Image (tube, rainbow, N blue to C red; front, top):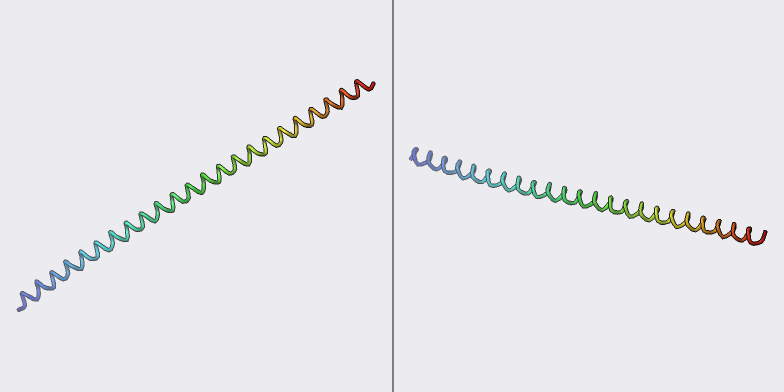
Length: 86
């Protein structure tokens, strides 16, 4: 009987070891998936932020250029009017 009990305990130990290994593997897999998701989200956020910044910079540059062009044209028009009047 003692021998049988020993075998049963050994089997139970093996089963426990297998269960522990499976659980650990599952947890590790889930952790890896979570880390990958977090990295992907972070990359997407960073890319989105960069794109938004580039768009803002482009808009600002365009506005500045338009304002400068308008001012230059107005100044030229004023000069032409002054020259024509004088």
